[in-house]
Image (cartoon, rainbow, N blue to C red; front, top):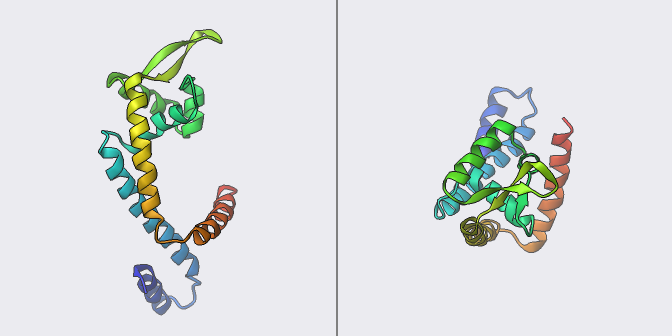
Length: 162
């Protein structure tokens, strides 16, 4: 019996007319997300990064050479607003992890590119990030993780249609 089971038990006693099983699913997903984020934030902090800065740097790194995207493409990939992306770009540029370079396909535009320092930092940070994620899912077997992935994809697809 976990914390969520106790909450469900209380609701069933107080409101037997309600079907509270979905509350259990959502509650566990919420608690899991919180625990996962805390663990990953500890890893990112070792590299002086936050979830926001890790997201931008990792997005540029996984893009492949030349590790650059337009601000619009970066915004779309990280699913944030233009104002939020501008702030992130300015902060990361200020500390020397990214740089603005001319866009060869658009003389008026520019691309956001990893600096050498940013490339080296995100390479180290992403390796630690993957290790943290592996540790976090180690309570599950490979088969259980595969089953969970299928269920989570289905759940996410349904929620995203809302």
